[in-house]
Image (cartoon, rainbow, N blue to C red; front, side):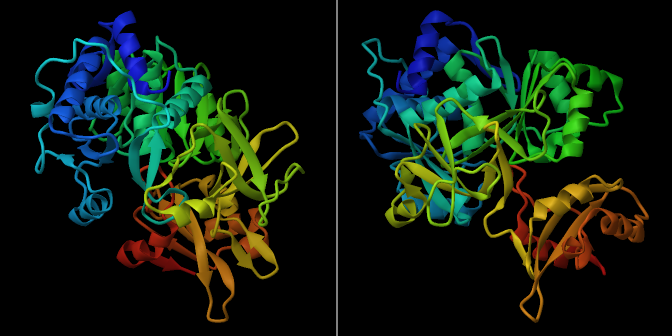
Length: 484
């Protein structure tokens, strides 16, 4: 097997009437999904779409979007996911770069309906080759700058195999994911379910405990995938009915770099009968490290390599580090890796060496083969003779009562000295800042103490929950108050 679309067609024969995807009150079976993918593929061919040409597909209609994604695979075209409500400037940048021959958007370009009406091929289906490019994904990812990542059918399939094997997805799984599906970490959850013949439950509604409980009640969801920034939605639930519904989950998958120890303990106490997974990866490489938090409730632990993954920690000279607990760059090798950045050979060569992708994260491994997250490259604060990791400060602050969220960033003084600056979101009125300062003085070394503490209404984060540290200064000007 070389592609997700091949898996879907095989399931359409083995379990034809089983539901593949549910979106709110709509659903599609594996038989219907295969038929519609074939119809879309034939429609592309009738419009003279050739192998390797790009097709832009918007996520507004999720069933049509995933059908089109599979249809592109079947026809050897390249899918270019487009987020719903994308800004005009961002859309034009993507379209200018990839030059799609067709664009499927609600308010512009082609209509999904016109390409999904008709009859699928009655002849023999020819599945795409594994090494054919299948998708181009927009991301900031490892580089920190907007880029386009190319993935083949084989890498997308390997990503699904990593995720399904690592988090226990089976044919009986009913998976709920509300991550934006134009992003790799969003569509990967759906493809992992489709690869296994499971059911994926999706929605455009904003995440909330009520939404999760409703989907569990209505669709018997067993596997919940959510980003780090939504974890608190699973805790401190006062409504007994909501809490009872959430406790029916058998698997909770958290898409995060690392999880603070107080949060790990809270999750394990609240969901003792569910298996908790922390999944780490990148757009360029997919799901590469998985930690079974229920069995290994260790702070900052990313777990062990996924099915098709080989991980190395390398030093600044590109030499593999063999000594446990020594910091270095996280590097990943495997069939799930991207083939490169679209039309960016120099950038690709900069982060890919000997089939390894050098990620923008610092980490280490221990004596038992577990890997740990330390910091993003460029976020470590050089405080005189000391190196300060923002996450060390954030973990102490997040455990303090009355703090809803926090982030640490670098402040460079007039003397070119770097010091930590702390941003907090308070969950209570009349927050006592002096008590927080006393608490930090007791729990942090003097060189880690924030030079400033700034209150914000909200910490700027990506859709996946990562802190946008460069945006903190902008947020400060808009809503912050300074407390020295």
